[in-house]
Image 1 (cartoon, rainbow, N blue to C red):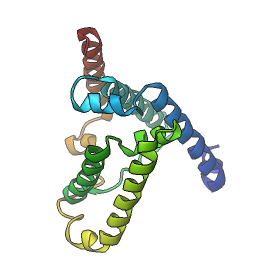
Image 2: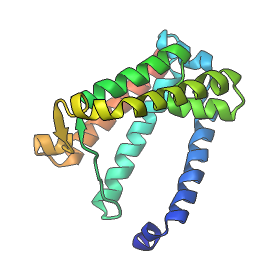
Image 3: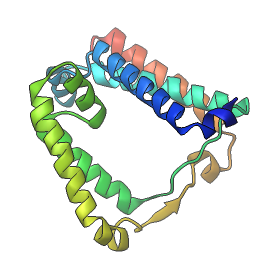
Length: 185
């Protein structure tokens, strides 16, 4: 079934579009597409964003590795480097700092009709992507490959079964979520 699905690119695009719309819907329902909620997170007065993101990390981490363990999915980590991480972090941070949206919450905010996201965020996203594309040939040669660590994952680096890291991580995140919820943050 998966091989048949893998061969049908239009079906994959349709599934991706559906999942993207669903993702945006859940971001909006969780309240993380609202500017005041995102700014509250940055000011450490509203922890809605961190609760949603940490719940997603636990769910995704367990779900993906469960599918992998059952032989229903393969992981294909992309190669990385410290140079690409720094450039990506700077671009993300500048955009987030100026307007208060990350790409996911920006799309959700546009979908709910936020004009600041549409006119400021979308234009900023396009300008940032355009600048990155314009400078990419230079970045690719001089900065992005610096500190290349390839497609190495943490379990591979530590030579551990992934579940040895996933279970304690999940328990720790769930404990943190419970603490945030019960402490009134």
